[in-house]
Image (cartoon, rainbow, N blue to C red):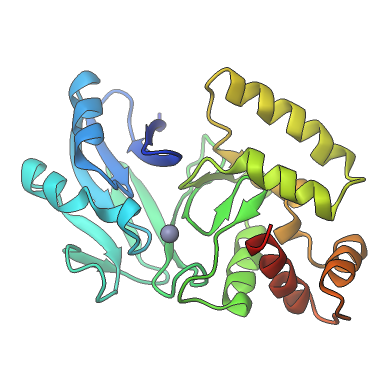
Length: 260
Ligand SMILES: [Zn+2]
């Protein structure tokens, strides 16, 4: 049975630890921005490290990778990017990475950065798990660094096409701030209002709002709702521009969020 452990780090990062089989101590860490917190967690839970999986080159996602590699003799998997020289095994679109008795499928989803990849684990007994790095968050999406709005929009559309029960593991706890913004775009979205109460309650109890479910995101995350008239009208009103394509609405929405 697959188990995903949550390792909170820094202000609001999550390093996700994948344990493919709860009967076995082997595990894989996603985006370790720091080695110490991962090392402490492995020790406390008597787990071994079989590999380090990176989604993109940002420091808060990779800075612990080299120390963990040296300490555990574990390979570092990641995108083909000159900005992550620590990577020992490069991955690209469609590659399949064996993780114990399961497999992660690689999706290239540039947008937040050009080198961004995601890891999709599909099992027969559980919903799919997507480790989306800084591409999709609870009620929001990543900022544009070296990627472009059309690329990020296409990446999110790809994720939106996954099964509705897919669990999304993003790299940051941004959900409450994202919901506050989302409510300015869709003030009448009752499900979004209900979600705000629910997620606020979780945070008050120190519980992570991630993973989130794709179906919930499609109903409450404005960045996955750019095809709706209500979202388009809000973005047009705030930006003062008339917008035709979903990708234009997305670009406008991303810009408004940057200034929020
Ligand atoms: Zn990032």
